[in-house]
Amino acid sequence: MKKGDFSSLAKDYANYRPGYNRDVVNHIIFSTGLNPDEIRAADVGAGTGIFASSLYECGIKNVTAVEPNDEMLKVGKEVNTKDFKFLKGSAEKTNLPFKSFDLVSMASSFHWTNYAKALKEFDNLLTENGIFTAIWNPRLTEKSEVESRVQSLLSNKYGVLKRVSSGRSGITENLKEVLLETGYFKSVLYLDAVDIIYRSHEDYLGAWRSVNDIQAELGWKKFNSFIADVESILVDYQEVEVHYLTRAWVAKKG
Image 1: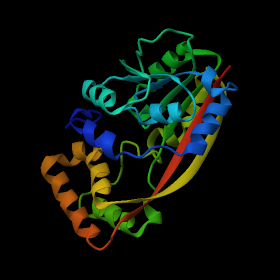
Image 2: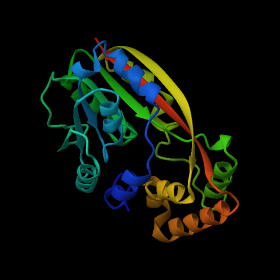
Image 3: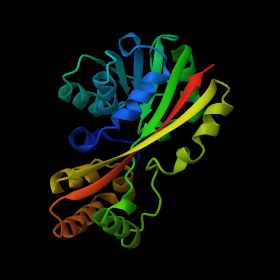
Image 4: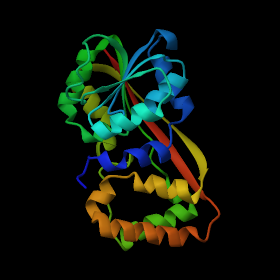
């Protein structure tokens, strides 16, 4: 498996990845200064449409989901019953009309892009006072006993000490500066909120199976050994307490 290639993970991604905190999503929508039914939104690097669905559920009915991976697009179209479009494109080349969107988002995907090219594309897509938001929902593994045990296993036995981005590392460490230094945006607002979710063993393991970077780093054999070790830990628990931290950077054009 190559890093960044989710082709074989699309179904697990659609079935087991969590959504985003609804209050944060509503604040992002509010920051546009428009009523939800007036907003034209593009969710780029949309995967199977998880964040696009969040926007739709919060009142934005004009949503376009843009995704470069064929399998993610296919599964997204299969699993979504909501009335929004899925189109093929990348953050660097969305193939969308310029100056046509009030909100452009990337959810758990901005870290895979060429930042300079992607932000130039978004500047072209956005209307005069448009909003770009980059959002992630990493887990606070230190807040959960079982998650702490799994994290220790991952680092101590399998040597995975750093992720491509868990939403708490990488580009998120200086994202405000990256956004402002482009000159495309006049302000950047940071938002976060925590959701505590109790997941079944199946859901928890499915979420791990939807992860690309660790599978690419460990390879098939070691990753399956890791999953077996996680199953051994889960025997001690009826369900898994997971703390999801939704983090969003909201940049206003100007």
